[in-house]
Image 1 (cartoon, rainbow, N blue to C red):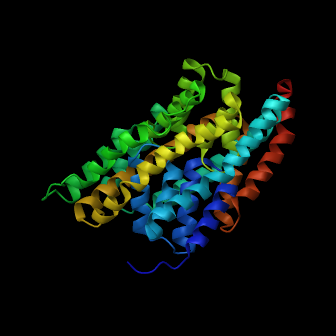
Image 2: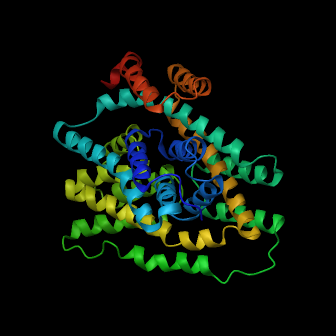
Image 3: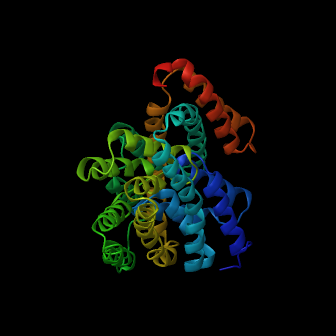
Length: 389
């Protein structure tokens, strides 16, 4: 492998910046990584990016965080993966802990409803543009990949979830059609994935304080057994946090999701906010550690095997199929998010205006749009929904 054209420090600084200013959730963050690392800087090759996206989609855990970890692993291996992952997650973790403190001390986040009214609509436009770019660069004119893509997009819209086995099916179908297997894998990749399970399952099981132990184990499960983007983890969190353990009520949970959506970085960082509301700063740390340690292990353990065999025709066909499935699910999630965020004419105008601005001005930074949308929401929302204040 040729020497990378960037230093580890440069990559860590970039991930720190992305974690600080990367608004829009997993779909947008995946798009930002492609734009910044592949298109503009040329630090990561297109094939390495696709392999990382496919691995992140195959493994359970938050999509954007795993892709960021893999980007660090490409040239700087374990130390690169570790530092890139920490840099990507840490800024948004600090933000949600700060918001958790304000929420606990001052009660409620009614102002955030107004800000998110604008931000949510702008995010739809940002995600739509990211999905469009990923689609055009990934699929080309391959009819089979388009069929896989459309199937996953439709399934995501209909079910409002990401069905893990369909991603694997997409990879297998493309493999068997494009490069019918003449050899059988000796199980290197599967063995690597299987080896993670006992590691991930016991990460946080040794706490003396029963509540912290419950929190650690629950969020470790969230990181270890939920596939796809931040959208996928929300129903899982609701079932455990509200229905099973009664740590939060419905209103608090909705506010927690709003905090994650309005702050930069991965949507899954809402676990830090939830943990803070339950047990304070210690709870935030345990919840975040449980969630992200699992996804870290699920990325770095199979990465060497995945990279080693990824150039084989059969594996390449499998990666292309699962990548098409992933991009299809991402595109479908745009519609799912739009259903919740684009609710009236002002939000329609904001979403469309965002997409048009990003289309017209290629160098326009997303945080500028997000801040402007938040200010618009603070002004417009009280006029339309005055009863909410």
